[in-house]
Length: 320
Image (cartoon, rainbow, N blue to C red; front, side, top):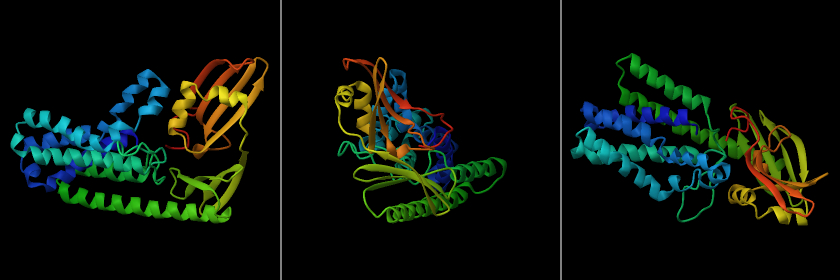
């Protein structure tokens, strides 16, 4: 999810940690847990530093090794030892480690339910896993937890009990969203004859979705509004040609294929050469294909340039 949401959940976990006697009964331990869960809830996204190396490196590495199985245990270790020493709570180190571990795991858990996906089972597999249930920002979850934090700050409420209830609602909400999304997938597949791959991506609205259905020869895209399926566009799969083959070995396309799952490629001819456009059909929105790689070729099929990334504003759909 987005950085703000992860930080809010990290603070909420510190409130939940007040149920732990070793945390609720010690100011030093509480402060160590608060800082630990705030940092731990964002730690897997420290891989964002690769943005400085450009979008190709970012696509290759974001939500990869820093979200992997070993990282789930390594981040809490790296954070808990210095925090325990700084706050003088080495005797309760295992409790501090446990709460930071929970924050890190909850971060990866939320990313798993996003449409972008996460390589959370590395090193066992480099496959991208995504449950397409939550947008990168969920207004309901953010508002509920932010409101809980505000109540905690402004009153003498029992933080542990309150956040236990809020996290209970959170998991029930995610389960209901998951079931709803799977039902939408079933209805879309049924509408198009139960053939091919189908992806349904949520929006900020509970009852608005966008879908992509892949058949042997086509990609069909559209929206679902309050259960009503609206077919918008059909994209025909192109055939291999020398221009596509010339572009496939560029850094941008290789990074794109490392991540993309439903690939559409087209070749456009212009006066000075060709432009080959690679797109991930999962992220179709409003008659556009905002995520992909573009390769410019001259008439001799030499690569002039290649780019990779999102052709949309961060606040525009799809929210992944």
